Amino acid sequence: MRGKLKTGDLALPQRRLRNQLISRTTFDKPGDVVRWFGAVQAQDYLAALWGVGLRTRSADERAVEQAIAAGHIVRTWPMRGTLHFVAPNDIHWMLELLTPRVVRATGARHRQLELDDKVFAQSERVFARHLEGGRQMTRPALYKALDAARIATRESRGLHIIGYLAQKGVICFGPRAGKQATLVLLDEWIPNATRLHRDAAIVELTQRYFTSHGPATMHDFAWWSGLTLAEIRLGLEGAASHLVHETIDDRTYWLPAGSSRRKALASAVTAHLLPAFDEYTVAYRDRSAVLLPKYAKRVNAGGGIFNPIVVIDGQVLATWKRSIEKDKVLISVKPFDRLSIRQRQAVARAATRYGEFLGLDAEIA
Image (tube, rainbow, N blue to C red):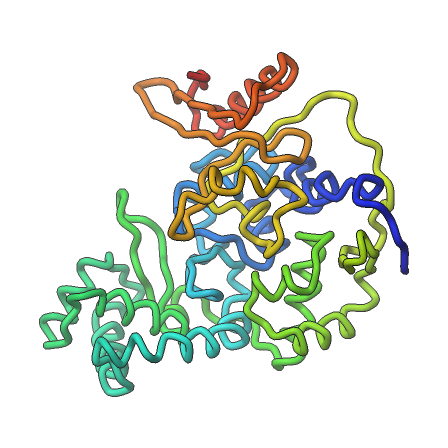
């Protein structure tokens, strides 16, 4: 299907809110939300719990953590050298598709740290010896095991070893032990995960991304996945029966087939408190449709750090922070401009939803 619409007619932000399961919730299980997306950025663990929870019907923080502890959600480094949540059945084909390019890109840093194939192979044997049989160990404990085997972990060597072996499909994160993340052997934690031929994997990931993130451009997907434009064209050809494209301001956007071309805006003001690194902003190379360039620095705190954001009627209009007290969560909102009464009321409703997720009363400071 082809069309040429103006951005305002398309209501692009509202359609993204819908496809990203923010303005609608389709799934009851956190693992199904992660599978819908393909991958959900999760370098900030607590923020990522909320990112999944807000998209799941009636989910609280404990329910998302239980899904992780049960292996229904896996946390590892599948793309961009950044931690993500992925569905267990997707983990092997996604690692095999996306990580080789990331590993090559970090080769120079590995050489600086004197990390080579021999060191990685020795480290893998150490991890196997300590983790076999379903055992789980924290990162500091594994560093001690490496140091005891005379494999130095100083100067970030330990983190690079863990990241490399995770990208190679040897280990992944398991459940938390208290507040500490643990690592496990991937094939023990997630046995019999699906393997896909490379071309089939590209098609699958292409369909997942544009279904869950559309309307989006090929360059957005390239930024998110690390795939080349040639690979994405192959994916779009293979997913042609599931996706459509539309032209907006001379740019081609892809989205799931069956999406309404024009969707009336709701009469009520809607607001959402989204976590740091949420897919609504971080998953696109061009964020101007939902975030005015003059506000970008308020959202991006520098060093690739994305602040928690307040989205009102699809637009990023504020940032927020939380502070946990005994029986409540205090939420501090910093608007970019003065908010109307209706907008403030919508933000208050969103804060209540976040409090319910935590099992606490919410109060806006």
